Image 1 (cartoon, one colour):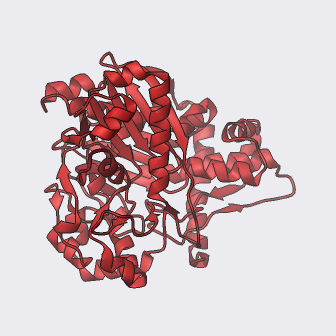
Image 2 (image 1 turned 60 degrees about the vertical axis):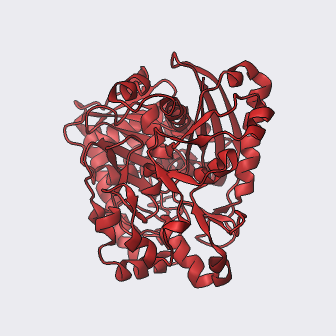
Length: 496
């Protein structure tokens, strides 16, 4: 039996997987994001641990026999967050999250200080990454910075609580701007630029390798065998790829993630950076593999915002409402820029703002809902067009947004690619984490990678109607107007 723990932004998920690839049980606990100032996004690490205790207590109550047969644990989670610890491993301040935009000035300073930054890290300096967050703390909270003795990523702070070891792995570490992504090792040059050394960093392992063992107190509390191995794990998107079997075989495999953020992920057996278009080049969770990734900050979270704003009961109801807009009316629907919390790919603009544009007295809530669903699709397409897809004709799809068949069909039409919905798509990262926990119990061989990281069965495929040139031309024209709208309003997008 293998356990995956996925520390997301809005909830912590747990998934138990057996050796026949069956999902035995899942559990969830909600999390809250704090926004104390404009552009700020923080969470208390203590809330992560409370959520972990809740899901583990739940599983222990419902499936104690599964936990009693546990062999491996894998961790996945939100990337880029900065957890700052003092010499006694106490948390010094709330964790600064991936979608925090306060450190734009520090990004500019870091880029000037280290001109070769993107060559080493494979990425542009963006406020979402970890290094600029530490620069911000150094500039604005010097008393806190002076006490920092350890910097951990969110899932790795949970690992510290579970096994007492400060360890990270390549896929998550690649999102800090402190990793030499080609060499899969910390960069002394990048660390020095931030006033840090290797001593501040956790030990590195591959995502499929062991990182430590569960502490006896947790084994006793949850009825788990002593010395259960904990894998290196992965950042949330690399873990989702493992859950979908992406990046194990041929290069060019990829997926779209419709979570809080929106991600297009393409795997490779080579390191292929493209920082000029704000493409992320990261290590994959398996040895000697990398991936490209475009990221938009607001995907399903844009739906959540819209359902609150339009007073709709839930995101599914919002998409159902959007689907009622007649096809002819879509040509005249408003355009929606989905930049509610700034944007990464392809613009790297922390000050990007959202808007509904083109409103008239004829528009109703269905038109507004449609514009949001379409606008998120256009934002994803902007990122997709920066990636090296090769000859790929389709992508897998994961995340909570994959529950809507109507939205997936719209996205397939926007991308002009097949979208494959696999079983377990809504638990992709937790499934991937469980698989990495499984791999940590086995020899690290290609045969074991292929045996464990199988592609889940396809439940549905959404195919664009390539014969309907009218629909394709309509979406292409609206996408062109969408891009022009961003460029026209960009000069007006100032810091809040």
